[in-house]
Every structure is written in structure tokens, then in C-alpha cells.
Length: 205
Image 1: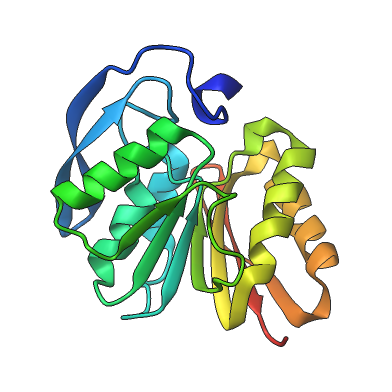
Image 2 (image 1 turned 30 degrees about the vertical axis):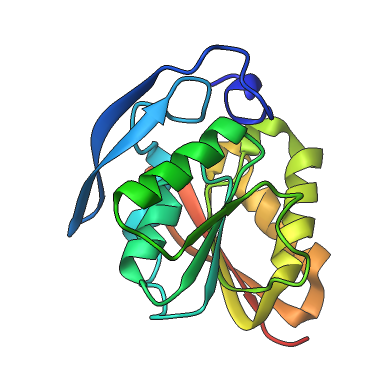
């Protein structure tokens, strides 16, 4: 997957949408729109599938965030599971953002809000973050993303990040613990099919 496909503001190729059917959980099989020029247009990628399989059930309400929403599998799953929550999906890719918004609308989800990273108000904080972060953009960019969003967890809030083991999951876990400090607890939730799920919980202000 080239960097242009999922980490560009405007994909270079004309949009060609298609409808696919995906399983977001055992009880949520849905039809969604995807397109070229975004991450994983053919369906739910392996990492996201691992996250959706293992992440604990979201709280009934709260303010949630999906970092790098793509066409929306994580955003949609959280919104379906917790209709009383407000779920923010963010992505640098304008085509991805529009797909997430359109898919939420087609599924009747009124609790989804889609933003670019720059347009999401700075005073919004999050009780839950789920993300399959864009590892292949490089360590510096990835670290910048983590530094931007993880400090916006509420006290008691938690993030679940899925990262491929051979793409640096363990070193990311170590870096997160050092970067965030004693106010956060960084753990490994589980490992499945070469992917780690890291948990980051804010323990104090």
C-alpha cells in the first residue's frame, strides 16, 4: 500500500466507488461504500479485523475517537455498539472522510462526526480511542500522531492501538511509555496473527 493511498490530502486518481459487504462484528454485517485512493478499499484489513475482534466492548456513552478512519470500519463499529456515544473519525485523506460520513449516514448513524485532524476542535477530549495507525508513514510522523492525540484522553480514558509486530509494535510500546510518562499505563492487551494490540490508559491529569 503506497503512502499516497492513505496519507495524502487529495488522492491523485479519480474516485471510483463501489459497494461491499463487511462484517464489523458477529452482529453487524453491513454494506458500505469504498473507493480507490484510500487505505484498504477491498474490505476490512487484517490489523483492523484483529482490533475489532479483541478490543473490549465500548462504554454505552462517552466521546470516542478513531485515528485514521479510512472508509470507516472502526468508526462505524464504535457508533453501532454505542449509539449514545459521540464518535469522531479523523483522517488526512478527504476521500476517506467523505466515505466515512456517507457510510454513517447510510447506516442511520447520527452519532458520527468526521473531521480532518486540523479541523477537530482542540478542546474535545476522548474517553476511548481505537486506531489502526498508519505505521508505514514512518516513525517520525507516527510519533507526531501519537503525541497529538493520546494526551487528549480523559482521566480514566483508554486507547487501543493495533500494530503489526514486525513493523515495530514492541518498540512503539516502549516509546509510548517513555513519552507519556507516569500519568499513563501502557500495556499489551493481546497478540494475534502477528499483530499486537497496545492499550494506553490515562491514570491521572
